[in-house]
Length: 506
Image (cartoon, helix red, strand yellow):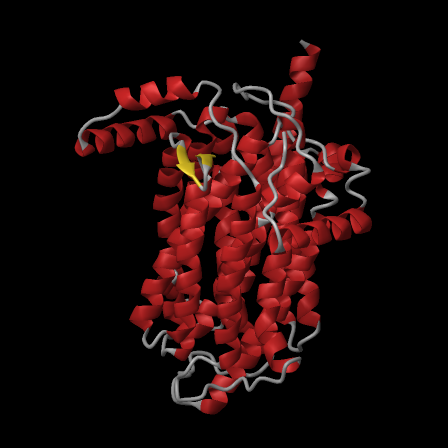
């Protein structure tokens, strides 16, 4: 399969990135040793795909850099933006409801639509590319607008658009990786995706801190209640990074059209009909897909519940928690119109960016060790151990009162995040039917969004009535949930090993 490289800027970047990664990690020489499939079972029923070379894998997975860049900016800074616009700590979880709700609705629908799509796009037959690029453009516009929000209502509305765009691009992108790679390369591809995603997220999380401490930009707002310039500039950079990295992947990665394109066109003609009939047929098919969910997704249900509730606690409250524990921001303080309190919050948020960058770097490094650990302890066991590490890290943050030690807590969180970004998707893409990969990737997202919806509805009450607006105590609670998720995952590995042993004995 020939790779198509756009001329000029993108091609030069690709060559440079290939040299750096190849030299530093020796991936070209050790591809089959370093990254092996986590799962050995596959239900691929399409034609056998040719293996991609290293440059093609880089081009395929580079979109993860920008997608996660934008997502990390949002995760690290939206709570502080809400605070600058007058929100209280106990309202933050409710204001974040956009993220899980859009994921719940958008990803399964986009997955099912892209499974059935083939169209002429950028001069060639495409399936996922139109969705990835279209959502990336929307995300770029929203990231430019978000730090200029003039009210809570505007910021919350833009968050809905941002999360819709992020979910739409993410689902289509992950399905594209499954489409383009043969089974033996799939874990390698998802590991590279994790590398780019964590690199983008680390840079994004670090940007506000770098703007203040390296480039010397004034962290205070230029007007009462204004969002500080470092945060605004970080969002502008994030919008450009999101769109350009996705554009690189779309331009350099041609999709494989159906084996029999004419047969596909005939089937599409047969399915034409009134819009209402299409909607009802799509809804019926979606219900059937949910009922017939593959076992590999079902076994994640309880684990994901605790896992993502724990992560959501950290994302929402960690920056505020640092401001309170390290920079002495009073719990429940109103920020709008108080320059000194605003500065304390900004210091905490900037250091939260440092902490989040740290866990992304750890995840980046840890992703190279995941395949070997999975061979030794099993995919489920490795994921369980990784989740426990994150739980310990989050719980320990409650007892730290100075800046640098807070970064040590992020080592455990980084181990968790590297596993979350790699193992579940490698397992699912290997075990679900290829023709429904998009919709099942989207439906798996339900196990991520439902726990977050529960948190968004309940955490405000919990933080106010139980934790009395002490944000880092909410993070500690999230660590307990993550620890429970790890124990549940290890139990799954024990059961899996027991069943396999029984089959071998029979």
